[in-house]
Length: 269
Image (cartoon, rainbow, N blue to C red; front, side, top):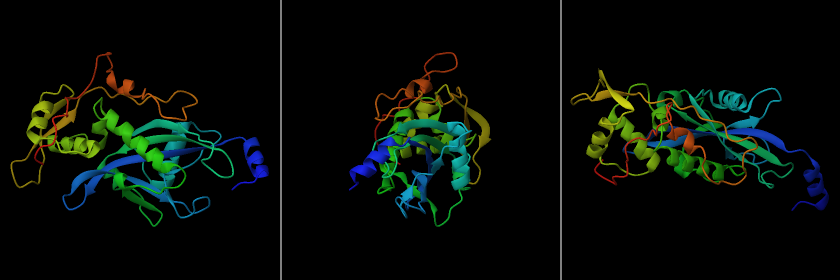
């Protein structure tokens, strides 16, 4: 327990500002090799929370923007340079750190499997299944849970799902993204029927090579590339209305952009 003198000294100090990032990728999981959501974590090599796993991050430099700091920290810790990097939330609870108030500006990133394979894995940088993460340093358990909730809320809108895929993809690969994010099986026939008529994807003249059966058609995303918008200045300490959903609901011409409903329920895999 902190003495009153230590508490008073802590309260008189200016808050420290840090940047952290939740990085999501789809990787094969278990014997089925079906894709699941994974994220890289960094083992802390100093106090506080020595030896615990934590989100990649670090202090905010005095001359860099928040997004530049997030991108730099990712390069320094994991070698990743994701194409989708969005400000998620500001976490600034009074008791996040013992010696000084710590405010973390948290970003979230989506990376393709080929990008995830480039991660600098080591004793202190490893990938974990997102649903298995617990006991992280600081309040990073809460941050990961909030980021997963944001991802599942946004998968129904805009181009989020396609940031997990390459420029060309099969409908089965796209269904794998939705199943991994939503955490449930989707009927393959219903999914193909719905997305073949979707206005934001188009078939190409190419097929996926290397399979034993008839090679599946490759598709490409043709919808608007909605850029993530930054959170309001100052952020918020407690999750509330998810305003960022609105940014992905509008296309360049202001009309709604939403993929076909995938709420058809479980079906054969």
